[in-house]
Image 1 (cartoon, helix red, strand yellow):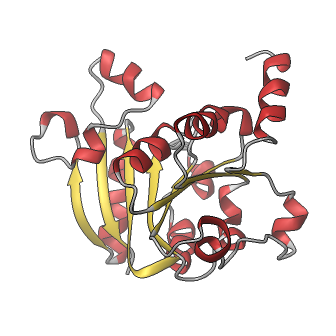
Image 2 (cartoon, rainbow, N blue to C red):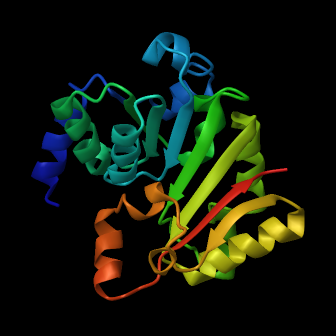
Image 3 (tube, rainbow, N blue to C red):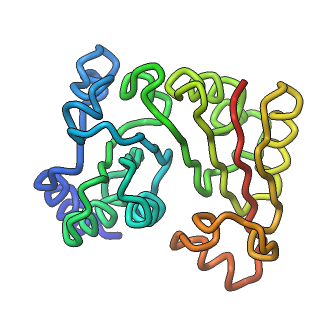
Amino acid sequence: MGSKNKLKRFKENETFNNVIQPTRDEVVNGNFPFKGKWNSDFFQNDKPIIVELGCGKGEYTIGLAERNPNANYIGIDVKGARFWRGAKTAVETGLNNVAFVRTQIELIEDIFAANEVSEIWITFPDPQIKYKRTKHRMTNSEFLKMYKRILKSDGVVNLKTDSEFMHGYTLGLLHGEGHEVLYANHNVYKNEGSPKEVTEIQTFYENQYLEINKAITYIRFKIK
């Protein structure tokens, strides 16, 4: 994407009422206005809040929001030029149960209060295969602790990935730490019992993986 195109998208993002782009200082200094107030101040309803971390173009956030008007969906990504597509689609189609926040995933505890989130989706994260990158792996122990703090007591996490490594690493960690695996499948499109929201919503990259017959894996779990 050219820098001209990026600038255009950044400018357009500023006009969308479903996009929030706080400064890092605002977030880390506790000045993010919607923390603990997403239901009351942003969505102005009491529907469950479901968060997609590393939402990319926002296909999953949008796909879930279209299927379930009885929940609020928030896509988080540090790259605003990417989720511009999802934000624009929501505006154009009148989807009012969607928001996008431009921030780092490590800062989610400054974006959401304890017990504010009902469900988390992690779709096609970078598996960070090299050992020295494990601290960035989105299902490592530290991230799981962070997710647990913002999730309600019965909250769940969904991981959908094309990485067999990420799937195996996460399953091993979940079993090793005593978390509750609700569903796990290493090839969702070959299994008739896969949840509909896993097989009916596809990201841009997922379509490319499917064209070359790459298996897509999925885990749904509760953090103990």
